[in-house]
Image (cartoon, rainbow, N blue to C red):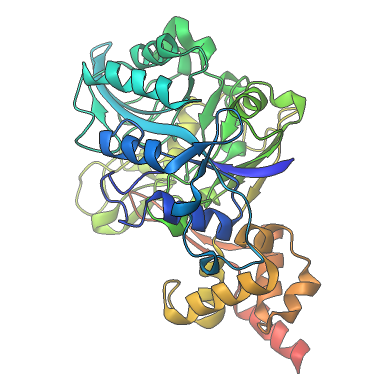
Length: 425
């Protein structure tokens, strides 16, 4: 079966997350978005682990369903969006440690197929650090050692370096990472089958590195609030099971992994270089011309993902390796409605329209990716099919993100709006 999976999220017990990041809300928003498999996030936190044990039932092998008594009011999900939701045990761990005379700050994702394995892993981690202080624990353990601990816990453990290019906390990041997967994981590198692109990079950027040819590129939302679910995600065509998902990622040539749903990488908040305090956004060559210093205040700029990829790349822009699964660049439906209605994406007006459209057509990802444009013409919003068509074609206007500032994506401009008005007239 074809389904969408968002494997990296956080619970309300992680820092800077919404109190709504609970299983009940995730179950609801997965249906609204069109996601079938959702990572639990944060299973190392004792309180969250207790909630997982209490509220989830085993479903297909290695996956879990929310017990009926916690699933909430069925009216909270439009009938057009109602669908099964499964959970997969996941956690992001922040490793901060010294290696080769340099401080490393690397985030990794760890998955397990069952609660007993996750409990054993948690018990091992308790011996090396405090896993109760945050849903994403910060531990002074080498990434390679963390991988070994996971594999020692269960041969079915699955380990993925998170958002591999993010400047501050990633395996290839500019500030504290390594120059290759092998430098980080050494002899255990063959156990690394995937890397997460992160919001500020996409597959074409990663394809510039031949060193990543054997790495399956996945994308996930890293959501800190339920409405951010599936802003990036993965598309599978497999049976619903933990083993089927991991096997598809290990062997993308099988065709069971159908690709990723991505941000336009420029929308990510670390795409270009810059210094947000001075509103300085710089391309890599501009940063080099300034010797890595802010042109306004002289402080060091944050080196973005584009720059870091360029530093390590051994291929030109536009290189297309054979046999790689496709990707689809999207932006959120509420952002599109915000353009159309000329008001904020979280405004009541936009939210009302969002749920009206879901009632009419189905879940958000269906509307963005698959709903026929002729059907969207029946929405009562004349600019909606224009904006969706522009999105699908990649015909968008972009203001890049930098130094923690998200970029902006526009699917409509004055020309498109005027052309639509003329057609209506």
